[in-house]
Amino acid sequence: MGATIEWQSGDLGAAFKLAASSGRPLFLYWGAGWCPPCNRVKADIFGQPVFAQRMRSLLPFWLDGDAEGAQALAAQYKLRAYPTLVLYAPDGRELTRLPSELDGELFIEALDLALAATHTAAESLQAALQAGQAGARPLEPAEWSLLSLYSWDTDEGKLLPAAELPAVLARLAQACPAGDACARLHLHAQVAAAGRIDTGAAGGNAAASAAQAAAAIAAAADRLLAVFGDAKLARANMDILVNNGFNLVKWSGARQTELVQALDQAARRFATDTWLPLADRLIAVRLRMRLTRIGAPAAGIAELVRETVAVALAEVQEPSARHALVNTAASALNEAGLADEADALLLAELGASHAPYYFMLSLAAAARRRGDIPGTLGWYEKAWQASAGSATRLQWGTTYLVSVIDLTPEDQPRIEAAAQAMAQEIAATADAYQQRNRNQLQRLAGKLAMLTVPGPHAGALLRGLNANL
Image (cartoon, rainbow, N blue to C red; front, side, top):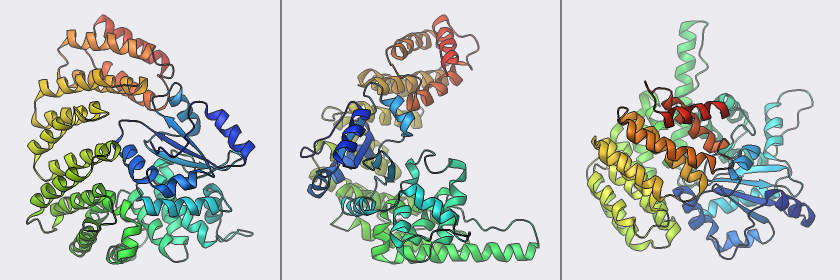
């Protein structure tokens, strides 16, 4: 990963001490070897010479989710989603969390902005929320940009409790004076509200409330059209548009047709932008595929997906980039109704992939969609047995056992065998009850509790989970 970068790993506390003594900011990467977005980051961001150049003046630290004690550290530093990218000041203060889905060029711009910032994202947020109060400090334009480029998806309550995110982001967007940062904040606010528009119309005069709601929806549509129609602005927000654009348009109200057409045009530009990695162009084609569900032109889209996948697979061979690409390609093929081709692609990649067990999960999901219970459980079991790393094995094993209980609750021998093996996995994992591991074990405990007459191993496993969760 980034051969020219001297990644630190192991003792994060020691790394913070080294950052302090050397006066260097610490750049933290939290990820896993099987995670497609992590592999995209490795290929498209960490693999860029300009990124390696920036890291020479920083202390880059790689916290692998499967490293010993990593899940406990993740709980301490509020890390969960893979990947999470955090920049710390030399004195250990968290400066900001950076969005991993930006393309390499835009990510470097965001990193440079964070390195030059005179305030942390938390400080800028506090000042922004105090706007209008006596003695409030006005934000500089760079601070608005820093907040707009904050990775709200991976905040994990560091700056805001999740329940407050939609309302606070809406306040930020409304308080933002003007410019591209404000457009991005409005997008964040709408995404946080699940694509819906906060009309602010509640109670009071019904006619006034209806007018207020209509005005809010119209203003939101105007903002979306301004982003979709501006090639530069759309490109700067491509990460949000390709991942959330469908929902933004789906909940847009009466102007949906206009917005679908505008977003489809933006997606067409992304798909033909040769400055973008092939995987990103494929994601844009997948967006076009999704938009056909709500009125975008459907003619030739399935064949376009097939052709784009073929071109990308022929050109992308670097392992990290290919792992991310194959995941996107299989998703795009499935959405285009080419499920058999998606399965064939995943099967063909198993032998060459550095993390074939991830693709086995996708094959299990495909079997489940077909109603193939033996195939579903077979692939989930293979994924578990093939997986590597303590946290991954624990989480994959949980997925298998939960699926067995869901699909064949009467198969007590299979449940008992899996429960016994899972107890061994848990006992061998030092931080089994921390962070991502804990989430999975909570899910497993709920499923085990649903068994009418649990066997001895399932019963013992449930008692152990209840005692520790």
